[in-house]
Every structure is written in C-alpha cells, then in structure tokens.
Length: 58
Image 1: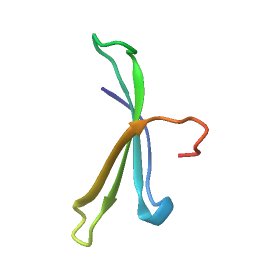
Image 2: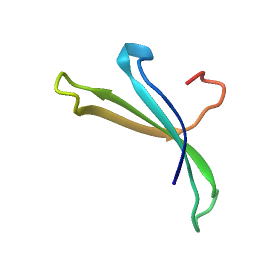
Image 3: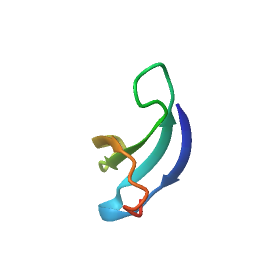
C-alpha cells in the first residue's frame, strides 16, 4: 500500500487518506479512501474504506 494524499478537517472534521493498493488480486492496483472521524480523545471513532472517486472532491 502506498499513501497518495491526506486531507483533514473536511466534512464534519473527517480525515481522508487515499492509498494505492497493489497485489495479486483481480483489479490490481486499486485506489482506496480511508475515511475516519476522531473522538474527543483523538482516537478513531468511525472508519470507512471505499473505492476512491476522483470526482468526489476528497
């Protein structure tokens, strides 16, 4: 996995890290967005992993 970009403080304080994942699986390589929200103690409270959409603006 190779990190490509990171954006913090977007929608409701969400952080988005985009990574390229390469391997021996159909569709490789694929770019994924790791979207997470932090709680008051700066711990991950919510994590969502989705296919990167270059037109989503995130």
